[in-house]
Length: 328
Image (cartoon, rainbow, N blue to C red):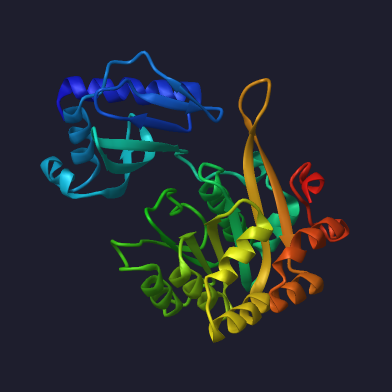
C-alpha cells in the first residue's frame, strides 16, 4: 500500500476508535462515514478514491486488487498493529467497489461488562443443548457469542469448535482446547463443518450465523448429538427466531424438526443496542427459556403462543423487551 493511502486509512481508523464508532463505510468518490452510537455521520476526511479502496482490498485479501470487479460480495478480516481487528465486507455497486467495516475489540469481550444476564451465563455451563443468540444486524450478536464462549471455557475445561464466516474474534487465549474454523476456507460449508466438528470430539460447537434452511438442518443435527451448541441468527425477537427456524422445514421434515428442537432447546437470547441520552449505547435483551410449557408449544408448532409464555414465565427467569407487552 502506498504511503499516502496508508496514512489516510491510519488516520481514519484512529479517529473511528477514538469516537467509539462501530462501523466505517467507504464508497468511491465520497468522504467516509462512521456509525457512532447507532447513528451515521459523515467525516471531514479526504474523499476516498476507487484506487484507495482497491489497495485496501489487496491488503486485506490474497486476491489481486485488479480482480475485484469480478467478485460481487466478499467478507474478510484485517488485523493490523495500527488499526486493530476489523471485519471488511466488500460489494460491487454502480459507482464501484464499496466497503463496510465493522471494528472489532482486540480482546475477547467480557460477559459482565457487556451486561449479559446471570441466567444466560448459567445456560452455557450446561453439558448439552441449543442456545440461540438473535438480533438485527449490528446488535452485537457476535460479541455476545464470544463472551459466552469465554464463560463456558472458564467454567469447565472443554474443547470448543467454532464455525464462522469469517473468524471475527481471536479466542485462542481461552482455557481449554479451541479450534476456530472459517467456512469457505477451512471447511467448504456449514454442513461440512458440522460433520467434521462432530468427528473432532468437541464439547461445544459454536456457529457464527445460521442463514438458511440447510444451516438450520445442520444446527439441529449438531444439537441432537448431545453437544452444547451456540449459534447466532438474524431475528427481531426470541419468538420469531423459533418460528423462522421451523418454517424453513417442509413436509415430514417439519414435524421432525419441531420434535428435535423441543428436545434440545435451552433458550433464546434476543438483543438490541439502545442509544442513551448521555451518549453511547446499552444492551437491551430478552430471554426465552425452554420450560415444559415452551417445549410443548414448540413441539406443537404454535409459535404464536411463545410471547405470551414469556410474559407469564417471569418467575422462571424469562424476560421480554421493555414495553413489548404493550404491543400484543
